[in-house]
Amino acid sequence: MSRAQRKIDHIHHALKTGQHRLHGLDDISFVHNSLPNLSVDKVNLNTTIGELSLSSPIFINAMTGGGGEETEKINRCLAQVAQESGVAMAVGSQMAAIKDRVEKQTYSVVRQENPHGVVFANLGSEATVEQAKEAVDMLEANGLQIHLNVIQELVMPEGDRDFTGALHRIEKIAKNLSVPVIVKEVGFGMSYEVTKKLKEVGVTIIDVGGYGGTNFSRIENERRTKHFSFFNEWGMPTAVSIAEACQFQRGTSVIASGGVQTTMDIAKSIALGASAVGMAGRFLSILLNDGVDEVIKEINDVHEELRFIMTALGAPSISSLQQVPIVISGSTHHWLTERGVSTSNYAQR
Image (cartoon, rainbow, N blue to C red; front, side, top):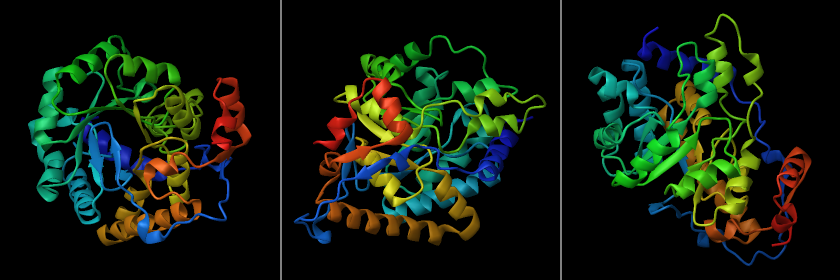
């Protein structure tokens, strides 16, 4: 099967498998504030990740590209959404365009449609410094996502089987690129141990890509004759991934992603410590079913709802939302307790 066809298959399988709210965010509850002393019009949604300033804590996370006209159309539409709503946007892995120049337009269309917005390039951890620079130049990108997808590759029939040297390659890219590097998982979560290693080699932005969203094991199993079903339930839920990454890694910006669907999911992710929240599946579904205008409306609605939630909590900024008290229960509480993360620190701040 060609790389381009595989890209298209991923889109259709992602919509088919869906999302099942296994991210753990339902285990998070806000402590009600009866005296918030705040007005909705005083709430500011600006945030920063690393050295990048964003006008919104939500952004359109990596989805596609490299699959010919169909993926070009999706990226064109998503770029229009990003420009109109003022949010950042990432593209899918650009290795397809690096290996086949015909596919370049399926990615560069994003910058054409959104000339002044914040755009993230994307490559896998197998990339070289030269390939990383090419990917950034292709989009005039503001940052580069390097995705980690070991489980997806292992389940993918034609996937990689050798993952040695990834951390060293990431270190070289981080030290030689002129834009910030974001290292992201693709749906299996990020542990404290991994975030520590990444910080030690100079990575300052982590996208935890937790379990609970698009399940690339299930997607790749749809393409296998013999299923590796043991990987379908593999991974760390988004909620625990955020907490692990934030608890110990001061000075590192954390992005939450992995099954985030609602404004309350966004607010809880930020309260756990995330500085921004990436959404993909929810926006893609709305786009393909209802069109560009409905995605723009959804993002505008989320911004309004988030301001209302922050007002109720007495949090005028993203940084103050990161400090409101929350109570963690259920399997998320059990996981974090076993991993040495103090849940009482969240409840008593």
